Image (tube, rainbow, N blue to C red):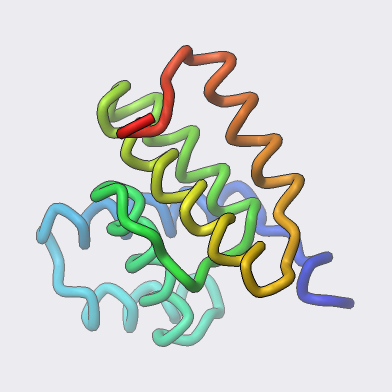
Length: 131
């Protein structure tokens, strides 16, 4: 199975999201969180730290260069929209569009991710920060 064919299950996405949010809020140290979560979702601590970094970058509106895949990015966007409001979503959209632009600059076309972001914008009425 190719990496792009991998699908996260909803329970694991939720676990990753909740722990990423705790790391962002400095409620738990990243290394400790990664070690604990690694035993639950069968991912390496290093991979899990990439998820934390991606989430934190999204919350600050900064471009990230590694991700857990489009499915995880979209899940994070939806959870941020539901739980953290328009301002947080605007920063997250800015971050994701920046990531997509970075990936496209090196020849990886991000049509599905861009379409998903546009749909979230359409549904919520929220534009990326600075747009």
